[in-house]
Image (cartoon, one colour):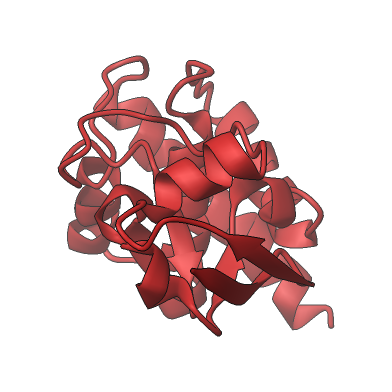
Amino acid sequence: MNITFNLNGKDVSIEVRPDKRLSSILRDDLNLKGVRKGCGTGHCGSCIILLDDLLVSSCQIPAFASRHKKIITIEGLSQSREFNDILSGFKEAGVHLCAYCAPARIISTAYMLRKHIMPTEEQIIDNISSVQCRCSSFSHLKNGIIQASIHYNRRKSNG
């Protein structure tokens, strides 16, 4: 089956089995190693991406469901100023992410900041719990997200 979608700003057309999962297509077929293989059930969050501007576990998306969609992975997000805002905020708060969860943590934070420019504590807790990794403490992550929102908002208000 041939599917076409927009991946990180570029149109892609690829021949895949209909039962193949989007996480495998992105990681194995398109060599996007920021999409991690974790639990395969959508619970760990290591494979999250933006699909039509929604945060999803790509291991739960069958190939056909990505047809004509807009997909953003960490590789695409890393080309944005928003990515730098998040990294700066995390660095200021002393957040040290492992290489395994960093892509998903950054994407989930970008998604949250797009929806909530000044996130509440409840929204931050939801964000932190979307990725199951214990490499960084809850308080560091919370402070990192707050700092990232400050950077994000400062840049947005300056045009």
